[in-house]
Figure (tube, rainbow, N blue to C red):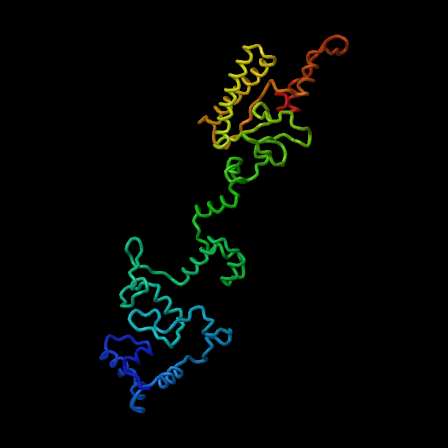
Length: 365
């Protein structure tokens, strides 16, 4: 069926304003093939346009690069003709693959030229109002950085980018130092680098080495801190009485466990009042319970004072001594000290306490 000028423009993707404009566009002197079709057949049909379109297909169609096995349907950038043009109508029938020059022209702002970039045509500028200009390689850097932020595997990034060596990825990674720091925090590596407090915050296991204890084992988590007791040697001798144990370790800056200590302090103070009332009524054993609660309250107050002190830096490991703590070793040393030992049948001599302390570490108090 014969087509009107408006129908011809719509079929070919030519923009027009009215019937006069459509007639001018369809039969412009630059489009002699349209004039030839009309003169030969007296009108133009879709069949005529179809034949013309097929005659203008690129050489090698449908191959974009037959040597590499790439068809137009597989090309990374395959668009309709005039897809990026600012004034011309987009062709609904012709395909177009932009080359390097077209792609660069769309992204780059050029002085003294009437050509406007895609940024100019859509009103985008830099924050300071200057024109946006970039190269295609900058987009490559940007895509690689996005892949790094998305934690894409280094091998996948290298293969996707066509690299032979994954170490070349570093050149295209433009993540800021604070972004990298946030990623390290999420993986828990920062906790490994910054000590027990960071491990507490990141819920990572705290080792005995972190708490200045000999050994590579993991410390036992307690209500108020950590227990460094070696259960493979002997069962716990202070079960549920961690505050009076020298193997109880606290970390400055752990606000959650500090609050627990404060609640325990209030409960201990209440228990002390009750035990003192019982002692005043001469209830058997109340005096020993009063002494225990008083000692526990004193240690709790001392520990809270240290953990709240501005002179103690966050992450510091706090471990209180307890001179009154029961220890079989202390009992034996005390027994040996109090008993006179004869040497050469003339004099008595106490064991070398300093040497014993050096050998036994802090276990002697």
